Length: 160
Image (cartoon, rainbow, N blue to C red; front, side):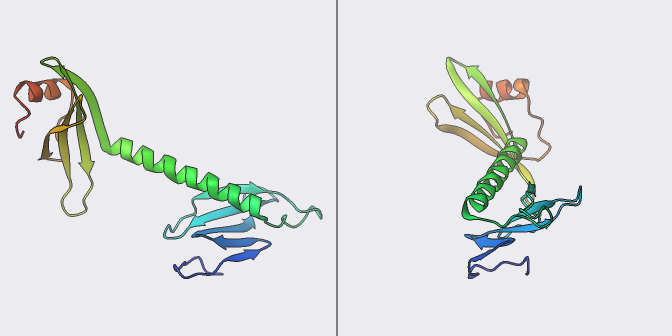
């Protein structure tokens, strides 16, 4: 069976291969031991999202067949892996700190924009009411620390 997925793919529910709602689960030989593993793919992502051990069947030789609860559990776990990865990526791309200036709190953020042709960053200040008071494009290597953020606030959030 092909790893390439198209939106119009039909559901498949075979003993060692399930495809449903953009997810594919396939039983594979576990490279680490004599057992089996399950490889979970999400449509549009080339690499497996999750590889997990899988149990032997009653004959202690072949893999146990998939069922709906097992597939649902693997999809849920793989979705959580993707969510966690996205949060970590977002956190790595955003630096933020809180500062106080003239009796108000501001959250100052530097968001890196990894554009293939024009990488840059966005420097922004959000007041304690949640309003964006300034947002400027800056170089990707913009120095960002508390001293810089405080000086920016003292100056009225001008374009750096």
